[in-house]
Amino acid sequence: MYGCQQVLLDPNKELAAVLEFICAEANNLMNCGIYYARQIWFKRRRIIGKYDLEKEYKNNKHFQALYSQAAQQALRTVSESFKSFDGLIKAFRKGKIADNPRLPKYLKKGGLSVVSYPKQALKIKDGQIRIPLGKLVKTWFKIADFFIHKPSNLNFKDIKELRVLPRNGCFYAEFVYLLPSIKADVDPLRVLGIDPGLNNWMTCVSNVGTSFIVDGRKLKSLNQLYNKRVATIKLGKAQGFWNEELASLTERRNRQVRDAVNKAARVVINYCLQHRIGTVVFGWNRRSKDGIELGKKTNQEFVQIPTARLKNRIEQLCEQY
Image 1 (tube, rainbow, N blue to C red):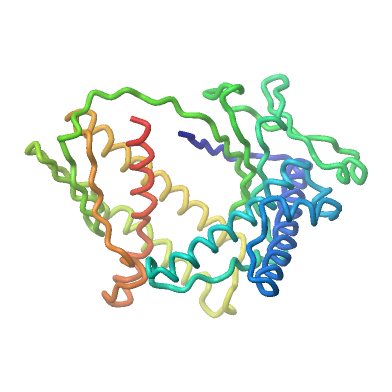
Image 2 (spheres, rainbow, N blue to C red; image 1 turned 30 degrees about the horizontal axis):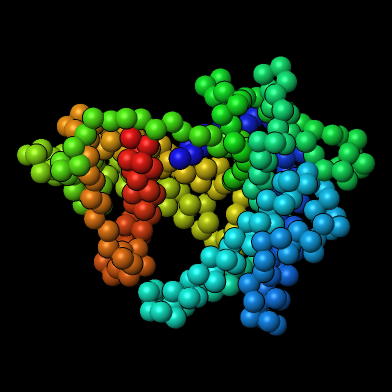
């Protein structure tokens, strides 16, 4: 299995301009791909093939502004989203899902998207990772590449992919690497049941006579403060208003939530390892987010708790161990 490590970048003006440019070009290229894929669906009721978009847009200026493998990955992301849409359509027709899926929508005009570089495109030089740029960038700006510091806890040979993530006015470098499997001394007949909630984020009971609770009130309070500050800033403003203060506030809140998810998942895994528990059962109610009617205030509190992300993180750690 693969792991991800995100590093917040602190670029100078030149590097920030380069990162913003490639992320903007990736966004434009993906919108071009979405347009073509949607037209194929409307006219022929056919899902775009994996390599069709690359063949169609290899001479596109947005494609050529990016490094070739990064441009290919952007278009493959589009084709994968339409492939997923096709799978959902088939599942809906068979009655496996309740809602009729919709075609992938266009990305925000003028927005920034993720740029992915496979390991083959990367080189290491003086402890920094060299990332190449596209042919047009070399012609226009006389810049062939840029550099990002390698995390000290990662070996370059273990890195499989590097992603540049634009988020709320910040840029992150996300390193995808292969995680080693860890042999754990556990018994599959020892089971931990998890009941997710709000004030008690996880109520955990095992069949070996032990139990514990992961408190959710701090996360709930964090979301309440965030909502209050956002409402104050947006008071009297037009719908869709957004500024740097809101972006900074949202980014800080998102970092705190990610930290809470990782720590809560680690509590569960460490507990299982300590008590040799080899099976985890996570209680899950379908449509628990969009189908609840607990009042406006409670709905908002419940919907903002990232229980699905927590469940997925616990699953990842279980697979690793």
